[in-house]
Amino acid sequence: MSISRRRFMETAALGTLAASTAAGAANESDPVTPLPTRILGRTGARVSILAFGGGSRFLSYDTDEKSVEAINRALDLGITYLDTAYGYGSGTSERRIGTVMATRRKSVFLTTKIADRNGDEAARRIEGSLKRLQTDHLDNIHIHSLTSEDDLKAIEAPDGILKRLYKLRDEKVTRFIGITSHTDPTVLRTALERNDFDITQMALNGAQVGMKGGTGGMVINPAMKMSFESVALPVALKKKMGVIGMKIFAADGLVGQAPPEKLLAYTLTLPVSMVVIGMPKLSMIEENCRMVKAFKPLSKSEMEEMGSTLSSKNKLALDLYFHNHVDQYSVA
Image 1 (cartoon, rainbow, N blue to C red):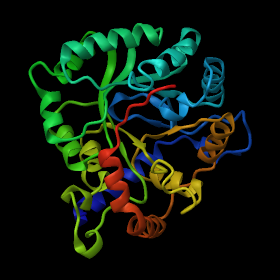
Image 2 (image 1 turned 90 degrees about the vertical axis):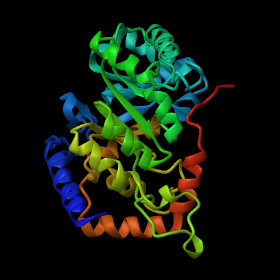
Image 3 (image 1 turned 135 degrees about the vertical axis):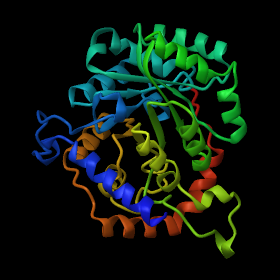
Image 4 (image 1 turned 180 degrees about the vertical axis):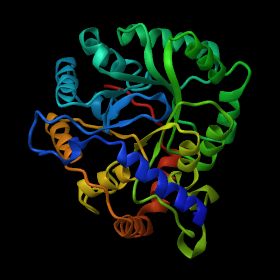
């Protein structure tokens, strides 16, 4: 990262952290204390800094009743952002969340993600999503899991999903549009630079901050030398997008290598609006809310030490894993 870019990132981080409410300094053991909130970039929406992930971990609740209980518990504890996708169980996640949205829609910033690249197919998918989620509009629709330059070309094509999302945003079917990626930070950077997104969601954790090379100085994919933090995040901040950090535990790859509250703090110390986490047990929802209430930004030296330690051990393996990871889930 260049000196100018580093200074830019640090300045942006201070601005984001200053926008947090004083709730984070309150007694984290008090269940009545609200979760800290931040502004979601240029959307102007104020959201909890912890989002509820509706992916594979949410689908691990083995009954609809248990999943509905989990969503209600998350909302009761102050989580205001729900993240889902058609690809999570071919609509199962959306349907379960929709059961709660039938009565609690107004208190939630609701996002779904669409993997279709053709505009007409995406529109049909979104129509189904609205029905499953029991709502007449979405707060945000993400293009799900950007992977490669060819993938970006398909997204940007005249008949692609992006132009259809612009139209749906104009028609107020969705308030905002965004894009997610955990595959290649350089491709996400390009997508953010040349398109009009309101929000972006990217892999941000202490183990993927950057590296000089793999074993013997070799790196299979040159993009793996870089990171979303150093390459894509500055573009999102420059364009005042809302930024959501994901994969903060690296699909559990970092569990045991650092305390979970430190892994959480690393990403929340970055200039992001929130982190999204899958929480397959009620106890995990409660514990993550507790950690968020107790959050205090890490110092610059703590960030550097943590990033150096974790990335030297994990970055190449994690980059390879996420490069091949398909962000879709099925249910038994």
